Structures are given as structure tokens and as C-alpha cells.
Image (cartoon, rainbow over the protein chains, first blue to last red):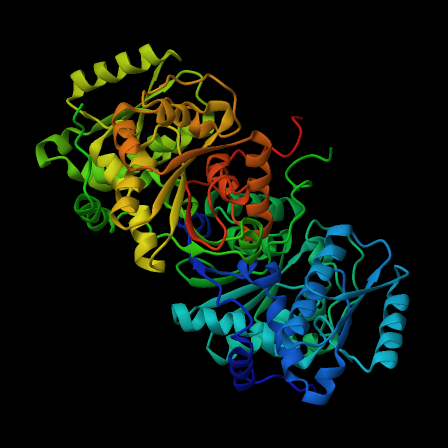
Length: 318
Length: 318
């Protein structure tokens, strides 16, 4: 299979294209986390990105990458998470419509977040088939371009810009670690990491380790269906991301639910920033030394900060 | 009464002195909070300061301001909060001992935080008399210099450096808003604010409004003994801060407990940073427009981020 892998030049072009519309997020450090990891850690704070997640990068790059005629017809996606908000924002910034197909049982905050950013929510039954059918129906009716959350060349190139910015700001890194769900962030990161001489690691909850097993077996594995607090990472690994990841990535490591929750809480307590459980997966991987850390300079992408503040995972259910 | 009020030059000197030992904290903005306030808000993130609070500034300035002989004998204070950790850190950085007098019933995290930073905890009975007597005893025995949390010239000058940095970074502001408890931060802020042409506001929980009533009556009022979620602001207003505040401050405004909790939650949710309830008091003051906000450019000092993550105030007690 031949996959068109984004090049470093494409990621650089994406960075220039999206710069007016996304934040150049800050980089943070923590002595206490360094001590725990035995490494020098630099955290790229995509939790402070617009819409609270790195997804603003890929979605913006995808919308701006459409030719003028296609862009004018707008975009459509199916997602109930950060990509839905990100695509709504990107479309609004470009002055074009966005349709977001969401399951009828999506939580109200997620629906509100899309609507606040100007996205038009189209409800469907809560099955993958219904989502895809509804998406296709909207695309046929409106001429909108489908922007997939991760199985998309321009989205992957956009997600790579976070690591590019980090490298521009802090210089050479021995390794970069990001969470892996659908694989868009890991694929984009791996393009940049490999070109700039970093080891590239994906971090995944052990409960949903299909990406780790895909890398080991060389064949894309179906989702485990397991339960994890890192709800952003329950997604199936995408075909296109997998083809990129398998060529570029050093390893995909796994962490337990307890390790994810402990890492999330430690970052809130010590670094005073809100990260979502998916971000904590990458933090846990370095704190638990699931990859070589000792004496190394390691970048960690804090992928997002969208959390239900009424249901924190270290508090027992009420 | 003549009070020696720190000058802008003293605050500038403090900024230079403490610069190697404290963070130059980031400045953040939020479109959503701007909309709520009707203002352009710039937030100085002292929650991201060392020890998680602006107190690192004043304590460091006080320790470094001692002459070499006095400094070598170390420092002592009574505090169970952020100042205790800040003084321990400042002393450790200067290579001198710090004794911290704490009530026997202080929470374990607070005791641990002082010890982790090298402070020696001296327990006493949980009364103001016992604290002061124990403090005096330690000072007599060791020769350590007392560094009061807020009723101290060098501490006040040090706290003013946060506003100086903010002004250096973002330029002219119409107003600056900070929480007021003992008054050290407000006093230091007021020196800088007044010299640089800003209106200066203190923000206080209505439940413990002794500073607001002190400003109105012109006579320092005793603590109300009221209950507030903003535990850092239960302190009595200091004599020295009050003399400075009454000359320089535009107004002290109050907010309700509900407003404090809502502002705290909104900052976590929208800005993705952890702030403590005391910080939220200043945020609430601008969101509730307790001071003139419309069309103005207003600085807000986010004073700290030390929170018990097991007892968030928007969750009912468990």
C-alpha cells in the first residue's frame, strides 16, 4: 500500500497557514516532574490551544487547504469531541459553514461548544453506520467537504505543527511523546520527529491498546472496546495514520488507568494547569519510565484540557 | 502615623534582586472572559509562580534584603499557608535556615510542602498568641529574623513586582485588581499602580469584608470572623499595608461566595488553569463588574493555584 505521507515541508507550510488562527501555545517545565521521570521534560501546552486542544491545528489546516470553490461550500464531519469544536472554529474563521454530525445522546456541553462556535449540529442515531450515512447525506445535499478527525492528509500535517513549534522554541530533543487514539497526532508528530532526529513514542491506555498491538503485529487491529478514563483515545486507529506511524514511530507504550489518573492529578497539582485524561496518558508514560528517560530531553504534547469538572476521575462517583 | 511606604524605585530594585529566583510568570487572556466583563482583561499568572503563589516574590525580597550577618542566622515566620512555603524556598535558595511556626492542627499537605522546601516546622497551639510567642522564642534562641507574611516593608515591595512585570509586558493599563487579605499584595500593587497611572482595586469576599470597611471608615477594622471559601483571605488586615492601601487604592469591592466559586470554575473551564479561591475573588470582581469595566484594559493578578483537589468548592461536601 502506498500512503501519501506528509513531508516536513508540508508541515512547515501548514504552520505558516494556520498561524493567524491558532495560538502559539506556551512551553512549560516542572522540576518535580523532571525528578519523577529522571529526564528534562518540556511540555507543549495544547490544552491552552484554541478550543482547548491540538485539534484546532489540523482542522484549520484542512479548511484552509481546500480550494476556494470547495471551501465556500463548507465542511462536514462526524465527531462529538474536540475535532467537532475545532472544525466549527476553523470554518467560522474562514467564513464558511460547518455541519457536525453528532449522536443523539451526545452530552449537552459538547453540543453547546459546537454551536457556540457556529457549527450546525445534525443529530443521528448513536452508531458508526448512522454517523457515516448522515455525514454522506449532508455532504451530498450541501456539497460540503468531509474533514475526517484523523484519517486525512491535511489534518495530519496540521497536527504535526505542535512538535515543529516546540522544536523551534526549545531546540533539539531526544524524544517526543504523544497520546494515540485515532493516530492523527502521532502520525503528524512522527513526520516532524523523524525528520528532526527525535525518537517518537505513542502512549496509549493499556485498556485500549489497539495501536500498540497494531505496531507489534504490523496489521491494524480493531478497537478493543475496553473502558478507559481517557475518552478521547477510545477511537479506532485510522488506516492512513497507521501507515505513517508504522514507518516512523520508535514504539507505542501503554499505561494503566491508575497511572493515567495519578499523572493527571499530579499535573493539576504541581503545574497548576488543567489537562484532560488523554493528555495524562503521555505524561504517565514518562513518569512511569515506559520509554528510556534517564538523562534525556523529552518533549510531551499536552494534547487538551477539556474536562468535566463535575466528574474528576480521582473522586469516587457521586 | 508615618509609614515608610515603598517607592517605585524600591519595587524595581526588588524585581532585579529576585529575578534569578522567581519565575517571570506568563500573561494570559481570554475572549470569553473579556465578553463577560465588557473589558480587555490581562491575567498575570502568579498561580504558575514558584510555590504556586505570588508570595515567592515578597519572601525572596525579604531574605535577600537582609544584611549578610542577619541573613546567615536565618529567618522565621508564622504561617500555615503560601508564605510558609515561599519563605522556606527563599531561605533554601539563600543557603540559610528557615523556621516555620505552624499550629498543631495544620493540614499534612501544608506541613509537607514546607518540609519539602527545607523549612523546619515548629508546632504550637492553634491560637494567635501561641504562634507569636513561639515565633519570638525561636527568634530569641536562633537569632533568626522575623519575616511577617504581609506587615513587612520588603515583603510589600516584593509583592509589587508582579504588577511591574505585567506593566513591562503589556503596557499601560486602566486598572489593576488584586485580592486583599492581610494586604501585602494590595499595598505593593498600589505603589506600582499609582506610580504608573492605573486605578487600583482590592477585591474581598463579602463575608470577610474588614478591608473594605477599613477603607470606608478610615480605621482598620478587626476581622469579621466570617466563613469564606477563599481561605487565604481570612487574615486580619495588617497595620502597615492598611496605611499604604488607604493612600493609594481607588476602592475595595466585595463579591459573594457564589460569585467566587463561579469565577473559579469558569477560569478552570475556559482558561484551563488551576487557580485557588482567593484568586477567583479578583476575577469575580471584574466578571460581576463591581468596578468600572466597560471598554477598559484591566490587569488581574491570579494570586495562586494551591487547591485541595479532593474538595472543590463547586462539588457538594462528600
